[in-house]
Image 1 (tube, rainbow, N blue to C red):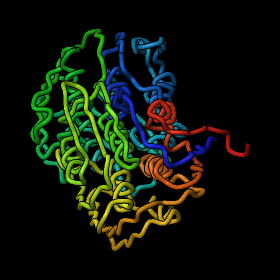
Image 2: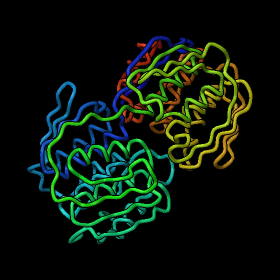
Image 3: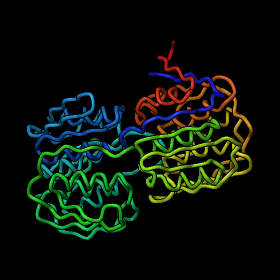
Image 4: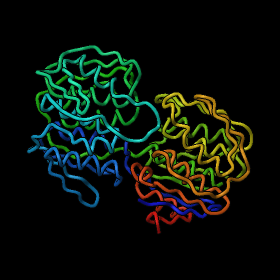
Length: 419
């Protein structure tokens, strides 16, 4: 395990490139199973969640070759349909591999997935909707077994626009002679990227990016090469890092409209934002002011950036109110930020933040992926030295975060814990 040692007080400046999207890469990697052919993927981030997903694909029988800028996946010889318990427990989003395996083999066996402890993320929504399209579910204390003869034509109404459930239904429905309609579907850009990938292979997925998605089953898919979209959460993280340090930065290889709510809120705090094609420039040359944020499904303010933006608000002038409407445990990280001098009151789904002029360096323990990243940003702006341990959470979702921040003028050292 690793820790970051951060010397705070450095204003970030310069420019840096955004990596490929974690949240788009994982379902696309799962989708490579369905074709039974070779797929070449570009712009996949080199992060722990991707490594675990590739390990699952290898265990299922896929042949994988990693080159400098691409991953080649051959699923032709895949025969296994059981996802190992050990790997499922390491990664929450591993459950979406189930839909891809069902699409191709009409059966799959897996255990309950693991991941970050940020609140209840039950997979019952996945299983309930699997049943609606003709998949029989058998659950016991260790495994969930899914089987079907064929996917049935159905109109589905999601109780909540869950990204994972939307992706899993799409993946399970790619092959066959049915038509599936998902109402109240999630609208995130990562779902558009998954649909674009599948359609390039010959699938028929319509309406991705809206709340109604239609999938018409097809008989076969073809080999393709595909470039994964940029990571909008990393883009937001880097911009908030620039803001919290009073910096002036430019990020490249980004789709600005994917993070419009974040850009709007950064401008509201007093940051200067300029957008040119696939780049965003941020200048935070004065003390920023408090704003209120409320997380919502896309196109609302993303829950994944709430911990980072909330950390920024701890140093803004005035009082901010943060409402978290997606995950009930997403404020856990703030207990650590409070050790740095943040003035925060938490009442259920609401956090009241009274800004202070300066945070102070402290020894912190990462609680989850985005919470851990928020501690890194707090350390960047704090007076003195901050140590962030249990770094495995952060490494799950960010490619070379320390290197990118150091390129912008930060002073971060990564060490083995215990050194």
